Image (cartoon, rainbow, N blue to C red):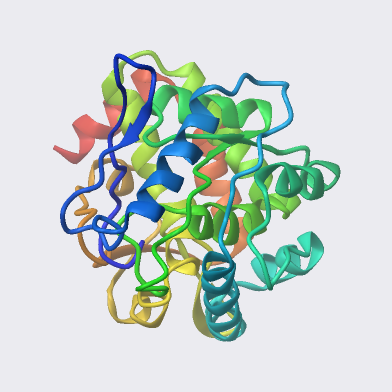
Length: 295
């Protein structure tokens, strides 16, 4: 996934008003004071942001631009082999820079004319209802920091490579973008936390870690797979199950390792029919019945 784990470093504000990103001792950047200072500054940009403002620019070093260029170059090779045709066409349509990290405002400016989506900066973890709900309005929350340069093909957290290479390329597709919007509408419609979690799990097993049959092969369309240098080579060997809303919404997953259970759509039209249809119509009662039937 994000190589080893999805981990959002806690963000706090001191009494003096300083923003501090609390990196774990195991984080590759923990002992790098320059990186940590930059992470704090980038988090502060998001905490001070108000929707409608231009997104403040994050400061990146030449080393970090080099990390982006290296990862993009290697992922492009893997995408040609493993990504769905719709994702590849959308990536070409979006035209992200290959040699430097794009600013989120730049990504928004490229994306909005295509599918109406814009990016919002996030300091770290965004509450589920807020993260998914704004998708209905054509917004996507994204971190701005990038992984530490010492390990360019590993990240313990969803960085700008995951958020942009994985999600922005997909959001440049009219058909995938429509599914994101439907997920947001579903998150807004359901009332209970249990139903919201069900909706989020369906998103996890599709737009984050979804796979699809295409031209006799298994291809990936999920952002978590397509932004991971390691997992993209492993997903075909996992436990691949048929697309099933009740199963996806009730299956537990471990975010600290590669996903060993994946759900296969037979085509993009199949994904739109089954998952898009669910998100377009689901409510608390429907989800409660799906859960009860699985018990």
